[in-house]
Image 1 (cartoon, one colour):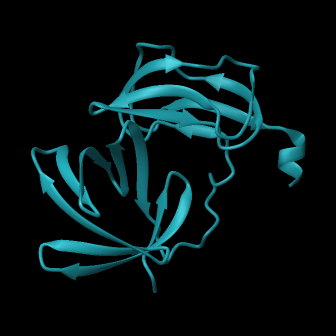
Image 2 (cartoon, rainbow, N blue to C red; image 1 turned 90 degrees about the vertical axis):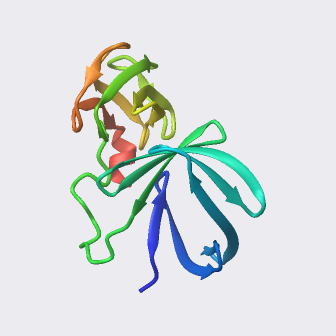
Length: 168
């Protein structure tokens, strides 16, 4: 079975192949040569196809949060033995992936949002992460205001899907 990873909610097929000190990854049929040198627990230099980049990473269970080139990426290995449809797959209930602090809240209860809209900016282990709407809908709850601390699993934002989105 081919390894599958989810990067920011999009699935990718990845096949690692070791070559000397570098690793070549086949990502969806595209070869990428990488080398990683850790500078401390969360900071590393990442060499991608000959170009050096600074990267910061934090892990929470099976999720890896990567801050690279001004963006935060969520990477998770997909469980190839899972049944597929989880209870929260289409849910608008967005929970904290790890403990942290709310930096900014961009929505209020009853606001209409579109899939991909930024709802909140949080910070966990020095990594800032945008919390985005998984689908169109109306904000039914905002769990915290800017400056508030939260625990892993705390409700950040809840979105009730529009009736047309629920029917599809």
